[in-house]
Length: 416
Image (tube, rainbow, N blue to C red; front, side, top):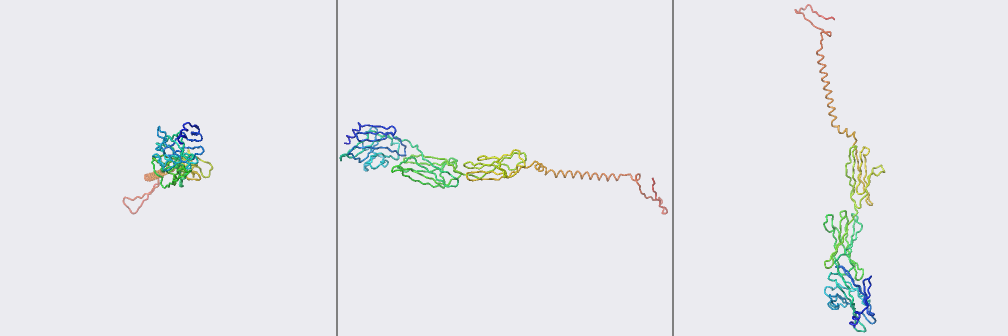
């Protein structure tokens, strides 16, 4: 009877659906609906959709799938890759990799899933339904085959990154591609720093779980928990996945960590009158922080920018002296740095430059005056000694006789 049903399929009606890529082959009440062509990737899995209908009195008992050899009729035992009867020998390499999506054959669902795909799994596949009709073994098979093409693994894992803030714990999530129920993949995390060197994130913890979506579909998930810091900003984290058969894929993402460093002010706070004052206030942060220069007691904003702001005063005067404030705002934080500016006046500059010369000038002038005074006094003293006293003034003289007579003392006085 099986031969008769199979033979009638040679003359069966074949209906194709271009939108779904499935075709239905019917012979009377016996129909099989299959996908004509499927593409999958190595390391993942493929589902071959299949359904059937039967005539009255036929009871399906077993589902058999074949992987056809080239130019073969695809009906030999050594081509079987799945048989719902467990003690049947199957083709080498397919053990444990093929399952029915619906174990209850009475549901007339003959779809299978092939896990841990390899490039060698590419080829054509055929379905046969074995059963009983009127208490006798019977069955029917599809003439149309499903062609499966297995390509290299190109799908990448999805890396989910939450908002990262310095000093706070964060959890990254990596979801493996595919929803296969085959072998559990190996998932590892690596971190690539600014220098390009690949390493593992220190102080981290990882976790792995498999989430079953249906009886034959699973999602494999790995998480990485660590304390984020500024050194992680703009670095790459990579999730590597290794499937059975040494098939690997990876996905990476750039970390963006919210952080802020201290306010830094550079420039000379002491300038001379008439010169130009330049002070730069900068804050290393992500996202970049708005920066504003202001002066206490004034509502005027002197300068503002993002990341770095320069306060510039051309032709500074003493009125510009005083306290200035650099204010940076980062998210909910406000950072300030107070700076005292001193403008040295021109007068202070002159006096300051001559302060070391002036004592020598005073000393020189004093020495000169003293020298002139000494010379003048000496000159007067010498001039007084040279005056002609007998002709000009009264002078008293004492004369003594030659014979030194004690009887007479004569005092002579010159009368003008």
